[in-house]
Length: 68
Image (cartoon, rainbow, N blue to C red):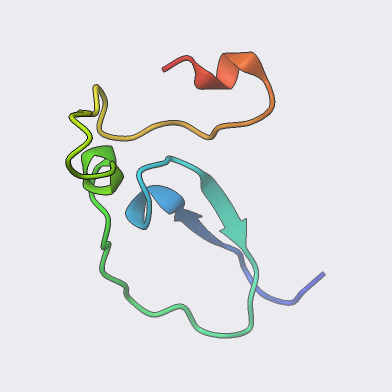
């Protein structure tokens, strides 16, 4: 339909959440460098909180989406 192949990008490369999605675009997607590696990187500093997992799955309105 769009005369191009989709690119699969997982938001885990940009956020602490796994969320693979297909993107259709006529703009070339070049190489990119991930800038957030783990959940620990985005927790509020000095709140004495520590991540139990490195990445979380997609959070939705379904209760089961919160179970890691």
